[in-house]
Length: 141
Image (tube, rainbow, N blue to C red; front, side, top):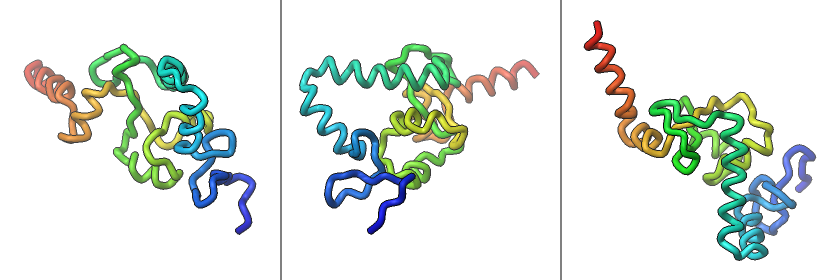
C-alpha cells in the first residue's frame, strides 16, 4: 500500500494511526517516552508544558465559571462534536498534541471549560453555572 506524503502512518507494523512524533502514533510514542523517561516528575512536566502551550492559545479561564487554575482546565468542542472529530483525525482521546501539531486550526471550534463545567455539560447537557445565571437574569426582568 502506497502511503500519501501528507498522511503519515505509525511505523509500528499493524498500526494504522496517524503519526504523533518520531514516526509513531500517540500510543506508541508515549510508550517509548515512558520507557526512556521513567521519572514520574519528568512526565508531569511534559504534560504541564503541553497544557501551558494549549491554554496560552485558547485562554487561561473557564468560559463558564472563570476558574483559572491550569490543573482544572480542559478543552471542549463547542458543538459537542468531539467524538466525531477524534474519529475523523484518528485519535483515541488526547487532542492536545493534535492541536499543537496542527498549529491550532480554527475548526473545530473549541473552548476552555474547567473539569466541573465540562462534566456537567457532558452528563446533564448544561452547566449549573449557566442555569444560575439564567435565574438571575429572569429575576432582574
